[in-house]
Image (cartoon, rainbow, N blue to C red):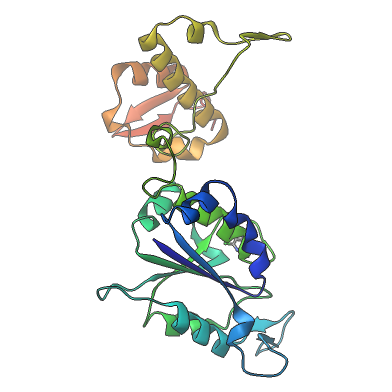
Length: 265
Ligand code: 6GU
């Protein structure tokens, strides 16, 4: 996969040289280039912003430097358009399913806006060259797209073949199956006033799997009941249904439904 990031603060992306993603780049599993938007300006002051038409607070990013930058980094392969991700609190919510989907692409280009955003005509024009995906991390506001790009590139990059040493660790993690991860423990088994749950020391692998599954349901119902409402309950085992019934959830038409006044939501 090839990733290009365009930003007026290229130094913000320096952490992508570290750890798993940095190693993936060194190993040639991921080609990642960071570009300074200002190198695509033509005026003496290297201007990237101007006042908004219609008035209002703040500045808007000018269209032409963006068009120059995006034209220069786009590398269409076999007629396939690269994906242009525009980080914005007004975007579609990024999640694990989207990370998996985007990990299949040949090229991702990230356009980091600052100030009040990028002139909207860039987004319209870019559809000729890219599949354009405005994307948000969640319902809060960052000063620019750079921190969001760090998060999205890490989430996507770790799914590329060979990046995570043991691919099994991708299977049993939060959101991989629509549920939160079960709690984990390590030695010592007795620590201060806290013991590791006895079942984990039992050596009974069936019991352990059942306990972990139950903990996934318990955690998800307490912290993220919205995920349980989306969960495909059609394929649940008898044991799963019993665990969920204990937590106050029934299966109705293949969906989980909180028993009134009982479950977490
Ligand atoms: Cl992707 N960008 C910005 N600027 N703010 C955000 C965001 C993205 N996601 C949440 N807040």
